[in-house]
Picture (cartoon, rainbow, N blue to C red):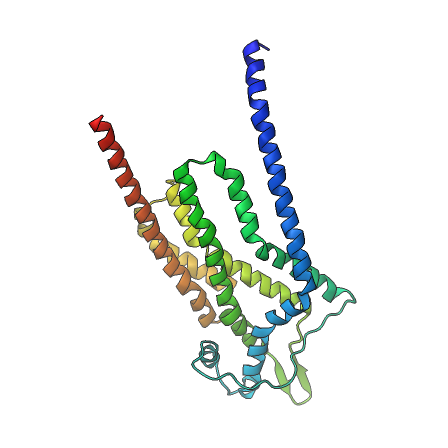
Length: 296
């Protein structure tokens, strides 16, 4: 090995160690934040689980107040109640869930605390990732990246709110309507606490990630992988893909599918506008740079 190679190794060793030290610092902060968030969420896990039961409660109230699903109100009546156009029926009876293993609800609360910890500490985690990669970015790239740190959790929250206030009540109302109550026969919905949490978290993640479409497409536009003309030309295929995803994620009723597909399609066209703005800004910067070069 030559002296030049030795000097190159020595010159790169210190920055590499600095990066590793910085990475360790960021990881320690992330782990500490998750542990703290987990402890907080586990301490209030019973209250959080009770809050997550609100959509089930709304669906049960609507089902009980409309002739047990036979000849009573339909999904549109439930939609009017959920969006505030009709008064919610009075609560009747007790909402019942079950667990069949001695420690099932305990482990369910552990899973709930873990899921809640990630959501609760997401701003800290995202900021630590940004703080680690920011020194390697140009100033313009840092300014372009920051809005996505705000847009991503806002869009995720919008998707989660749609699930909590609209989609989950529909899913559970539809499930309750499948019950059989005849003379001598009772087929009732008695969900397990773990299965209900799995349903809630699955829908929250699915809708929250679907609502990240503008963030993903805008980042691809910044990277030059897609452009507005390409996205506009393929809008029919995009709408078809959105409808297919909505049919897979939501329960088998057209209203729930429409409630997911409509905002995703709107977000797709908003993404086209965002990519177009990026292209116009980039064109303007290139023209300004060309003018500067010509004057010099």
